[in-house]
Each structure stands twice: as structure tokens, then as C-alpha cells.
Amino acid sequence: MTRTIAVIPGDGIGPEVVASARTVLDALDRRHGLDLGYETFDWSCRRYAETGAMMPADGLETLSRFDAILLGAVGWPGVPDHVSLWGLLIPIRRAFRQYVNLRPIRVFDGVGSPLRTAEPGAVDLVVVRENVEGEYSEIGGRLNRGFPDEFAVQESVFTRAGVTRIADYAFELARGRRGYVTSATKSNGIVHTLPFWDEVVAERAERFPDVRWDQEHIDALAAKIVLQPDRFDVVVASNLFGDILSDLAAAVAGSIGVAPSANIDPTGTHPSMFEPVHGSAPDIAGRGLANPVGTLWSCVLMLERLGHEKAAAELMTAITTTLRDPRTRTPDVGGSASTADVTAALVELVAGG
Image (cartoon, rainbow, N blue to C red):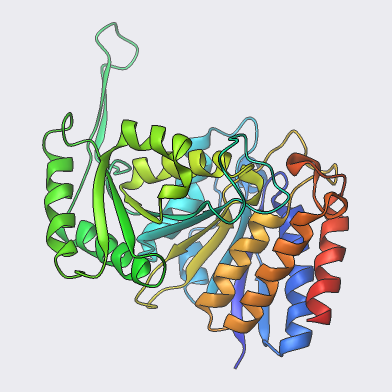
């Protein structure tokens, strides 16, 4: 049965890293008979500049027919970030109930961490970010625009259902890893939403007696991820905290260019979306310098979600192999390879098994 993937290359280096991913996925498909089908959509900041919308009015209805979504990157100078994100990425996450944003972090052999103590194989954690509510709600507004007493109000929304399901996902995930969950909070200063978060996480933890867990205030947790990155296994966090912590952890691992993410509807009712963390990087777009690893690791997560675990494992092994050698690493991770060089090396590895 063909599994269909909606491909949105997006902006900047997005088309380059997506093209790399398609080439490598095609090689995997030939080897394993994955029977993947693709349809590409030009939804982007360029489209916004031409039409006034990042995607057409029926875009979500169109995407709903696919088994997965592969996104390159969105963002371009001249288009405000809140326009590009709220015009494409966030509506997809919310319409398709992708309440888990999964962001694995690893220090790879060959990719130097800025921390002397962060050794390959020792730092291996996953940030589980609540993806559809929390601090990124649409509730609020601005009043008295342009006047000296102008002000803005933004409401955070934490529901029992939302905190329960993200906590359960984190604890289940930890069961298959090292059995340790850290909950990010700031309940000493934010007196309503985060004490509520703490209470619900503690309630859910009782259902997982085999999983060790603790909680850390976000400021202390950020420091400890820098000072003790090998301590952590699964970190569960609200929308804002998870967003910040995952970028910090990716920097600890050596480069945001290798960081993947998955926006998941665990129920399978809707398609899940897979994207690199790095953004559109317009300063290097078109120069052949883009690191495709973040997108390809996202494809590993996508293949796992689609039930192709063997192909996913082989792709992950190939990624790990190319990162060891500076001749098959891009300059952002201390190598000399172009995007095309990395792609060719990965194709050779996955084609040979």
C-alpha cells in the first residue's frame, strides 16, 4: 500500500535539504520497497508575497488526505516571522492535533560540542514539547495602539487534557529509553498555570512507578543542560519552555543543523509533520552549504511513524557514519562537504545496506 507524503520545501535552504531527503528516501525505497508517494506544494513566503497567503484556503483539507507531511523550512526577509509561522506551520499543528513536538538531541562522533564534557554517546536526550496550547495561545490582544498607554495581553492556556496527554507520552517514551523524566516548570514564579502543570504531571507519574522522575525550574534546568547534559533522558515541557530548551540542547550537541523534529498526532487520526529545527537560513540559501542531516533525521522519525523501522534504522546508521568523517560533513559541523556531497555519501551507504 502506497504511503503518501505531502512535501512542502518552503523557503531558503528548505528546497535544498528537502531535495537531499527525497534523493536519499528514493534510494531507501528502491532497497526496501517502501512504496512511498509524494506530492509537492509551493507553500512559502514567496507564495505569500505573490498571493497574500502562505497556503491556499483549502490547504488543510488538502493535507488531511496524506499519511505524513515533510516540511523544509519557512521564513524569508521581508515576511514577519509571525506571518510565516501562523500562516502555515501553527495551523497545521493545531488542525491535525499534533500535540507532541518530539525533538531528539544527541552528540555524534565527529561533531564537536562546545562543551568539553559533552562526549559522543553520553549525551542522548529527547525534549517532549507540548505543541498546541500553553504559552502559544491565540487568546489576547493589543489596545490603544500608537498611544503612550498602548499595551498587549497574551494568555497562556493549560488544560488538564493537554497536560495529561503530553505527560503520558513522555513517561511512555522514557519506559523505552533510560526510564527517567524531567519536567520543566517555573511554578515558584508563575503562580497559576505552572503549579497546575506540576500537579497534573505528578498525578500521571503515579501511573508509571517504573519511571524515575523529577522537576526542575526552567532557569536551573537550562543551566544544568549546559553543565550536565549527559544527566537527562526525557524532558517534558510546555510549548514555550520546550521550544527554548530544545534549541539550547541542540547547540550543546554541536549544531542546530543536525537537529530534527516531529509534530505528532499519537492517535493517528491526522497526518504527522516532520521538519528540521534549523530554519530557512537565507544567508546560505543556494550556496550548496546547507546541512541536510536535520531533515534526514526528521525522515528517520517519519519512517518510524509510517512503520518502516528497518529502513529508519539504516538511515540513522548512515547519518551517524557520514558525521564521523569531515569529508562527508558540511562546514557548519567542521567538515568540507557540500549538500550534494553528503547526499551522495548517504545514497551510497543506504543503497549498500
